[in-house]
Amino acid sequence: MNVVRKTVNHNKRELVTLVGIFFICIFFTVMDSSYLSWNNFLLILQQSTINGIIAVGMTFAIMTGGIDLSVGAVYGIVIVAIAKMTVSGWNPILSLLIGLLLGCAAGCINGLLVTKLKLQPFIATLGTLDIFRGVAYVVTDGVPVIGVPDSYRVIFNSRLSNGIYIYVFVFLLIAVIMGVVLSKTRLGNYLYAVGGNEEAARLSGVSIDWVKIRAYMLCAFCAALAGSISLSNLGSGNPTAGEGYELEAIAACAIGGSRMAGGKGSVLGTVFGALLLASLKVGMIIMNVNTFYQYIVTGAIIVIAAFFEVIQVKLESKIKK
Image 1 (tube, one colour):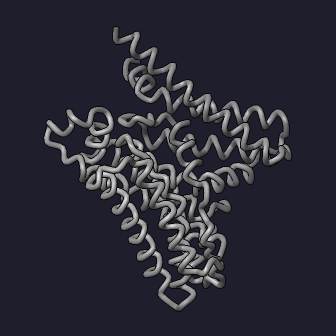
Image 2: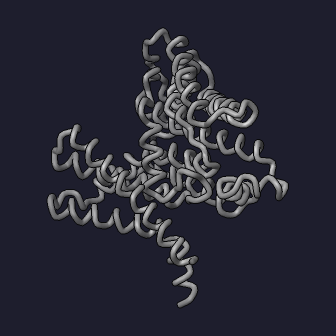
Image 3: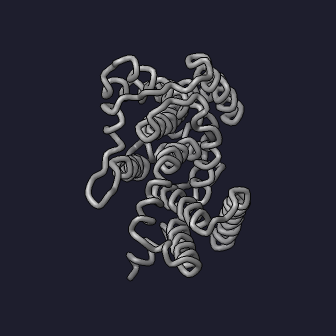
């Protein structure tokens, strides 16, 4: 019984998000019984994959007390780069690996700007957002790269058992791996320490700069992976791809319980946050809710999640007193 209570207390924010998903599903099922179906469940998983992968990476940047506004641009530039290489006849696996390395390099740049030049993460990544997006436009002259060969598209876009696409399993796999990194490794412990109290972590011998650089590299790697998956679905590389995706990723993190000031959050909570947003969007699509209203509802959910975090912090402070 004590173990159960301890588990619930440790994961209460994740459980709240899971309950939120449950009630959303119940509501839309009552409104339209077609919502509760296997095909719709698959659609929710597919809809949550891209945002979920980006959000998982964003969790690492937020854990340090920072943020990465360039993930949408990294997503776009990787799509363009891989599309260019595969259309030119490059080996699809090699093109994919180079695209992922390009994402890591972009993350390293962000990390260096934050740690070595001492720029605020918001400003640093806002600048690289425009730089990376501009590079994507320059490379393509603003024209989408079309004709991505099937040899690349089948890497992620093939169906496995029960109609589930490979990229859904990739999402689940990356979530598990990143979850283990955050909760079971020394890097994860350092991330919590840096986000919770950077000066105390420094005095304990933690290399603050190296921890932050790795966090931004992992963040950009996830954005690059999401971009490579999206390219396999679309079959063309558009330099505008990924615009606004950073906001949805931040929303999934906030809903899942990540504290914007750093030091608190989990990959599981972020995954639940992405699933909640996908469940909400799919439900509104089924009910033919106007797209404009979808933005309003999604924004309201984010505000409610942020308010819940404020209340939780106040309650914890009272309990400690």
